[in-house]
Image (cartoon, rainbow, N blue to C red; front, side, top):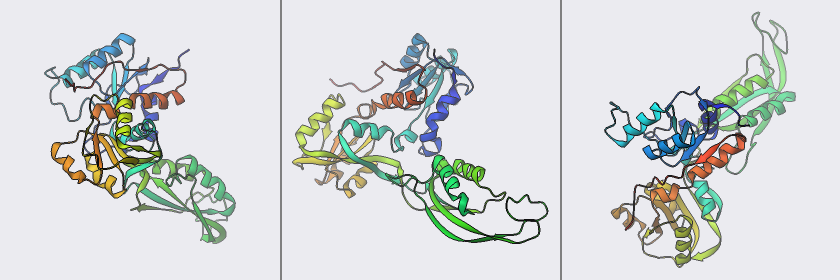
Length: 368
């Protein structure tokens, strides 16, 4: 029997790994239409949310649509059905269908849109092409030596200690801490008015900004002290778990033409627009779902043989400068498997619940 879940329960789970704080400034990810407390009958997953997709949801009885692209990018001053955006919103509201978008926050997630593309491109050793900056913090906390293990484990469980392909990373040093409880305190160690000295461990862990509040809460819950001495330091280090695009390698080099054929077949491309074939073989592949031309410099810096993305403009192709092959496979084509990615993620947590993949082709571009 299918379990009951609310819009908030389902979307909050997605935001655990693709938080709204990770979206780009121009974006509008999140709940666009609907009541967070609404009970969900079933979910329709789509790349875009259009009138046709809402109609599909009505037919199958789904009252939550989770799309990659937001139907509303900027504010609506009027909703009177004059364009497809307004008509889509009106239809959703009329039929009590919630609309949710998980866009650049999913793009920037280490195991998100681009990881799915990398898997289908047969690549290994995947890493973020342009890691995010100003998204990391270091937490330093002091606690009794015998409690260091439990405090660390609680912080790890809340998401601290991830560095690249490693987790549960920390550093511990030892020292002597001192404190004097006043009359209003409730010390777990020591007594009022008397200075106490104790052997303590100094624990240092790195945590992504969006997990900071949860890690601190877990730390304080597990710590034996009433007042927990700790520091929070913003870092300039790049966050290898968050950022734009990805880069990876083929197990064995492939001829450029054969690899272009593989790309075309994998993503069902009508055409691939590409620069001159200046490489006989492809080994290192950089890519970005959607519009990724802004990442060409990063792809070059990391010595990629080819850069795969969509929405390339005429003059931007010249920027390859015969040092890399640019392959534009199309915006829709590059991100078409995002609903499959979301389906796999959601089914792991909501096992006995109906998630449907949209059958509507929302690609607005046709080829003659």
